[in-house]
Image 1 (cartoon, each protein chain N blue to C red):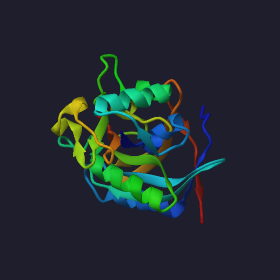
Image 2: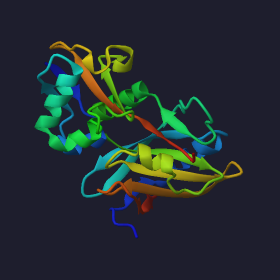
Image 3: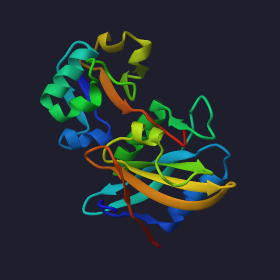
Length: 143
Length: 92
């Protein structure tokens, strides 16, 4: 049962992530920038390069220097880096053991499930204080 | 002394501060001093063996300390030490 506040995000940004995911056979990945106050809102999504060295269809990683660049971009534009998105081709939008091991506290993790390269489902997750992923509801906004 | 960059997910443990001036002559001394000042950071930056965990990257200016002298890498007053969480995952 979700216990986190919902994650607010514009439909257009969801469509941008879906387009990114459907354009690749490998897992896509990227950053969620926005604001985290009384509500947590995604204001911009920034696609990243999947730098995994093996099996990119089932794994992703982001280069540390690309991460630093986006943190600096967020600071300069009065955003916060509030999470990461990635795709699960032919797999549910549920965090894997790998996702859990690598997860950072306080980040939102959006997972897009694809079936045969087509978008199927989207869910967002966040660690609780015991490092268990808890689903956070996605509240899609028009504007 | 060095300026330490704290990544967003760990700023909750540093009173939402992104950049801190920390005393120390090496990365190890900097991390030790940082985790004394902010004890909640320790479980994220130091593993049971006292080492920096694999899922944390430390950069001294633009260089990964794995390509330098690891935790013994020296720092100076104008050095920027960046803590960068490894961002990874996937189906497997």
